[in-house]
Image (tube, rainbow, N blue to C red; front, top):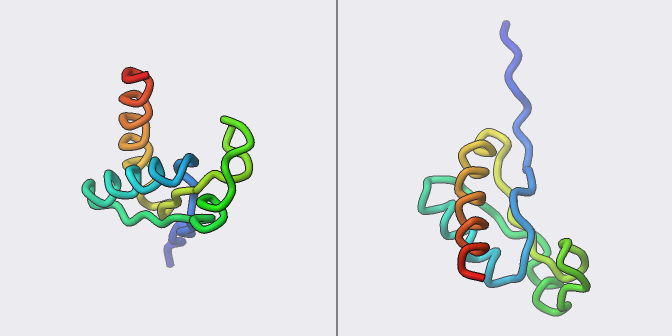
Length: 84
């Protein structure tokens, strides 16, 4: 009998509501299911700081998709830095 890896939700990104929706769209286009957390509180509360505190919306993915999702998010964040 083989042991299967436990699959759990992992936070892959944290940002403003529009950024979180963009990341979810990019992940879904890559064939990765992604979900938003704290969407309502992130919309109602502006972020207190840039480190991802109160007001940030989180994007989560399955631990089985984590490595693939990490590449998508990394590319998105690099594009943000090159624009700003």
